[in-house]
Length: 299
Image (cartoon, rainbow, N blue to C red; front, top):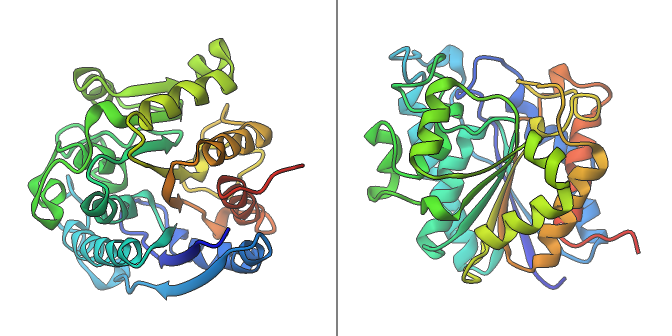
């Protein structure tokens, strides 16, 4: 518990159509994140928020890649911030914002940990490209871009591609995929545990397998947690809710299993939308899950 946590906020809502996730980082802080981390025994350095342009101040650009330019610019700044944190032996905890922030956070991590495995817990795979996305929203293209697929402005962030090896990407909790995205996932042999697989295997076994894949070789794991992975009954304040998600207890089990692996080197928490929330319930849950991922136990 002597590790320092560096909290980096990214108030990004350029990657999705629905407004509100730009205040998600503030909602998570307001829910007591930093104090709760200190109570757990960590030192916390809150680096504040990166500056992100508002959609009203910037043209959306091509409909197949909305807000591409500002997303890339912010991602470059975030990658630098995350790399700096790791080089100073801090644990980067990145608060979104929409899931497009993972382009910057994981790019920054991959500079320091080139064989990093990624556990992507999400109702969506975010494995579209500009050729397959029905919306043109970049938050749905990020994992594909990190694997080297899609527009070169995304894939070549920082000057190299791919950031991730396909065999070390594991997606858990998926229940809403586009048809072109399904084809890309199959073609690239991405490990996907859908909610159906969770029902069939049991969540404990799914997490065991997921961590064995992402953590193969003991090179470290990055956890990217989209709060819409959790059922809307427990996490109502998200931009793209999908019924039939992880339960409250399953979400905690996932985080506790990650903590027990002792391989976690960085984490994103994204898609908290306070405008759609009920009494900040989703942000409060996000804080609970961060604590579980970082070692808080029942006993």
